[in-house]
Image (cartoon, rainbow, N blue to C red; front, side):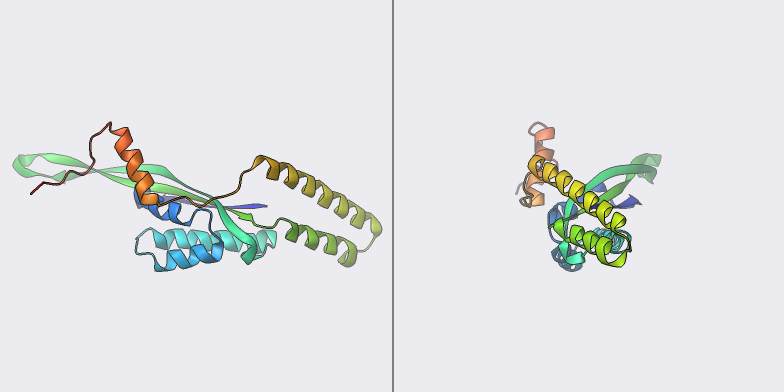
Length: 186
């Protein structure tokens, strides 16, 4: 079972939000909350609120256990760019690009069998009638077959290496050898 939560038009540049997103990708929800709580980045607060919202969605809408969830996917896409102008010397103006982000979190279960047991119990004990119990067992079997097919296709989730080094490599590769921030040599 996958639970999705979205945050649109966050007024922080996507490049800055991706540093936080790459840090918590693949983590348990509890570990991710701890990381975000003590991280000294401005984007950690809205990403933490989004994670809490996704966990609340999982609890209330799908009755999933909070301890059985992990962040399977987190994406940070570019949103609208607000174009502003900054006054400069001699009556000139230079452009300012105020960038926004769209953040999407997808939570998945570590052990998908936990919800199936709940469905079987509800079907056999709480609901009256053997027909509903049989149909519930059939749906559980169908869910189990689908999960087995998904597990064959998917790979194990590994936590990415340091986000800062990978993003720097991407930036330098795009510019074909030019450094992004050049500092004066002494």
